[in-house]
Amino acid sequence: MCSCVCVYVMGKISKRGGRSNWFQHSLNRSRLDRYYWVLAGLSLLNMVVFLFVASCCRYKNREEGYGRQGSA
Image 1: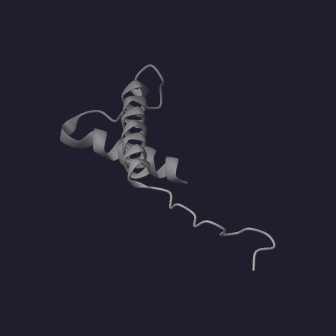
Image 2 (image 1 turned 120 degrees about the vertical axis):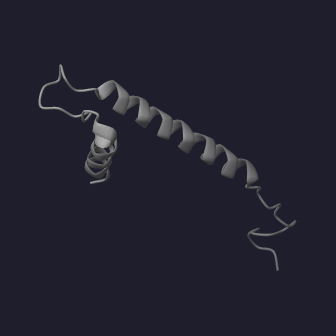
């Protein structure tokens, strides 16, 4: 569903300003390379955000004896 919405939105954005839509009926007239560059950019942005959030996350140290079997 999300990729259908993404293609629709990118088609509307690429048509702005009197330019032709990136998604034409013929592959020879389409500009799918630009669409895939946008997807690559979004993936890179997603990776950067993930690395930032992952670097902020720290594990808590477990207390001595926590979770041991048979300790009273």
